[in-house]
Image (cartoon, rainbow, N blue to C red; front, side, top):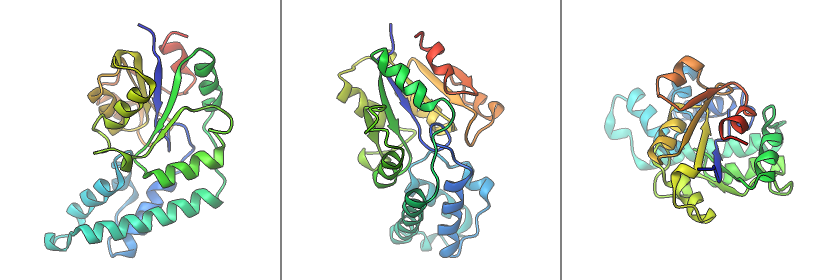
Length: 227
């Protein structure tokens, strides 16, 4: 059965990220008195961001009564502010072979979706800077705040499937650089759940979560899905 939709993650999968997201998280947490090491933050990359914040506060705030929805919201607002400022002003580039891969998929009638643990405002800022919609390279963009629950839940993938008129997840592939990307694809029952080593996780770290494939270059997606 042929693949009709490929859903890609953003930072670390299709967009170059030199721990910029983790550093913004670190800065936002530090502003509210939580010095969290980058290697801890990296573990939560790919998750919906308020969830990631709550999990880090559970680890670093000994007085659990202080972990309120208001605190989580304030940290998230600061994170979003920093990320939008960064993506509006800093150089942004697609990772190697990303745009070429999108074009090949489209030329073969395969829809291209972008989903993310970011809220939609950050995701749209990135897409606008890279002009992926203007170039006709992507069909769908979805932030984690646009569905009931973000990763590892399958709702973002299922939303794109519905918009594409796809009912069978065996016609869908998911590509991402983190553990939660893989679990999202598995929870959506995608035919291919492809881990990529261009982001937060190494080959060995991705292997632990049993993706169908692990790749080092996004162009390998084309061969995997049989184009």
